[in-house]
Every structure is written in C-alpha cells, then in structure tokens.
Image (cartoon, rainbow, N blue to C red):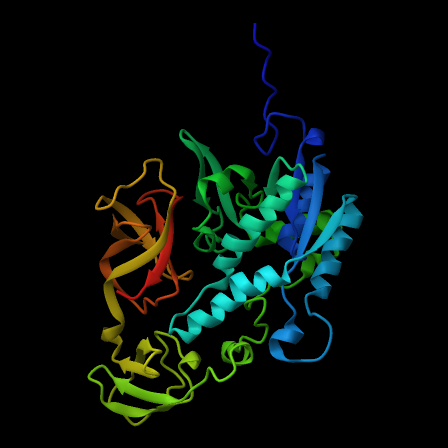
Length: 379
C-alpha cells in the first residue's frame, strides 16, 4: 500500500512549514516585509534576500551614499524582529546591464520602456531565482499583488483580488517554469489597507512607509536627466513636424517626449491641440498630430510569452482581452501568433497612444486569468 502523501501546506507544498524553505525577495517596503513576516509566523524556514540594484548618486551624478540604503536597513530590521536570516546581494552590475542600459537605449530609439517588467524578467525572476535554488529553497515568495492558482494543467497566473493593486501587467513575462517556483501571498488580499494592518499587527516599523511612486533608479521622475547622464550627448535637438512632414517647431531631444504627450510641446497658437503620435529617433523628429491620429487597432508584438494551456502555432488566432498600458482596463481583441515569438493583436475598438516599448498583456476574455503578453514594436 503506498504511503499517504502529506497534506499540502499553505504554499501548496507537500511538507510541513518548518521543513519548507522559502526565499522572500525583500525590497524594504511594506508588501514584501509583510510576506516575510507572515510566512515566518506560520513557521516556514524563511530566508530574506534584498538586492542592491542601483546607486542613485551614481545615476544622477550626485555625491553621497546610495539612496537604497534605507530600504536595505528596513528589510534587515524586519528580519531581526521576526527572527529569520537576511542577506544583501550585490546585483548592481547585472541590473545596470540588463535593466538600466536597456531603459536608456530604448528611449534613444524612440520607445517608451517599462524597466520594472525587465527587472522582474531578467533579475528577480531569473538571477534571484537561481540564487534561491542554490540556497535549497522549495519556493520563492514576493510581495507582488497577483495570484497563482493551481489549474487542471498546472499553475496559472491570475489578476489580484484588489483591482486597484493588481500588478499582472508587470509580470506578463513570467514563464511556466518560474510560476511553478513562485508564490504571491498578497494576491488574495482585499486592499492595501489590509496589508498595512498586518504590518502593524506584526509590529513592523514599515507599516506606514509610503509606496514607491517612481522608477527606482529615477527617483525624481526626470527620465531625460538620467538618460543624459548614462548616454552623454543623447539629447540632440531636432524638428517637431506634423503627420505630413511640415515643420512646426524645434525640440531639445527626442528623449524628452513620449507618445500621447500633449503638454510641453512648445508649439502653441494652433487651431487644435496636438499630441505626440510618433518618435523618429533616427531622424531626430517628433511627429505630432490630432488626437484621432493616436488611435490604432493593430498592435505588433515581439518576445511574446504565452501562458495558455495549449501552445499556439504560427497563424493561429485566439480571442483575448488586451491591456496596452498598466493604467487601462483590458479591451477585447484577437491575438494572432507569428513565428519566432512575434504576434499581432487586432483590437475590437481603437486604443490611443499605443507606444513601442510598452507591454501588451493578454487575459482570458472572461475571468481573471493572465495568458501572457509581449513587447509592442513598430508596426
């Protein structure tokens, strides 16, 4: 008679919590701190890891210590309070090469990048996961607001219970293999207030710590200043033209503009408001036009990650719901798979300001399941 398999623990693993090692990626914020404290309280063998990713002083050419130091200290204090080991790993070189350089080069090419996705894809869910396995971890937990649900064909990715906190847009590149190893304990919480209440119950000093609003290595929100520091001479002047090529004015660098931008164009006195509809980095041109010129129904994609149960062959089509910006709700459309990780999405209704460099994320037409996504490229 076969031995009875142990009942799964709260992380879905067939062993008691004390025998389950969990590496928690700790940023120093309230979300990951609560995850670590929660799992420690439940009796798991928790190991906290904080990544030293960047130095604001170096990025902005300012003197002084790394601004990420407080976050590291906050994470360490949580570990000390809850009684689990905490390590800081130096990933600055990898982060610079795989995230910051990509960010700068994308802007120089006229795209609008999303470095948080690249960080999850290339650093946290690849390099850090390898470290977690080296430490003998059974799984890795993060403070992201997204749900991992066991489906009939394996683990599935689903939107968070709280739509206002859902981070599925930033995690579309998570692979099936990574999803098998990852856990997201906060995905089922009803609100951020619930997370902060848990932090207060655990006695964590970060309970009232403000959420980060900017890209971590651009604390001021001034992307152009960081890019000019990383790529001296990047802000070359050029022409502002309409969609017919008529010159309307001058600009001080394509990197200062994004698709959909209306304010700050410096071309007032026209009959109708104009928006940035395209960036021609090679010609150093900012192309502007009426709002209607921002609308598009066809979106070309590269580096597509598909998380559906059945693989799609090139040419195969499937109905999906599509999100082309993190702040926009999913809209119905059709995904047509192409060769070599490429695809095209046709939206049922036009979207405005679809920009190369942004992500296009797919969802099941009904329900909360995340089916993957890809990077928007020029049509």
